Length: 265
Image (cartoon, rainbow, N blue to C red; front, side, top):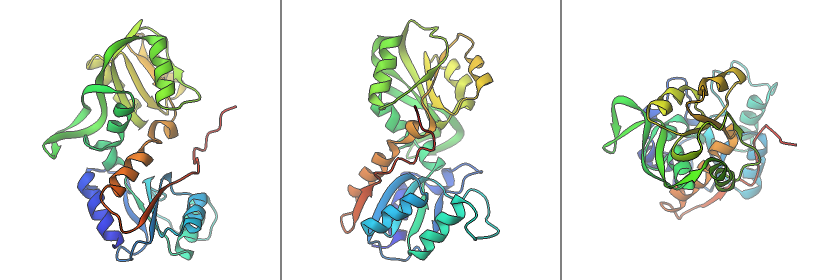
């Protein structure tokens, strides 16, 4: 089984052309025609992940975030990006990223996984891309759905913390006494706030909000910032399930390393 075979399959789930213009998803390091010995799945393909891949005998890393977003003019190890790429090349380890294309699909996508964790029903894409579909469904950013049973707001926040295994949630004013309609976006989703409001969401769960942006809730909706890493960490499980349910000729592993650069005290 070659790396290109796995990439081809993952692109049937989330085609490369669905990634955003700024993105760099795809095979970033390595030869697509190399035989797969083992796969390590992670969010961030950083140096410690390459070390883990070496220890597990994996020669392919499947990451959500691309290690390279912009062009590299030199490779001399002056920062973590260059050191990761050098280490991967030295150890003959390929790095493949499946990023905003996986964010934008309805089936088996990042936001679908969050909706599953929160047990949302009647889900739809929060902000569909006009005129663009895949597998006869809209594609686009975020997701919105309903809880089967309305919950008191503080009860829902405890539920959110439990289901997403969170240490902390940053929230705006609890202007809603109960929660029924929930909007989500893994990663940086602040640009979707107005869409969440227009579609009647009681709460918008995402990450990477800046101080002044929280005021935009304006007592019309609750913003819940759960952190970038925590909003997307179950993408690892999503990719693992996709891979092991399709292929049996190599071992697949979920990373045991928490690559979240933010620590809580």
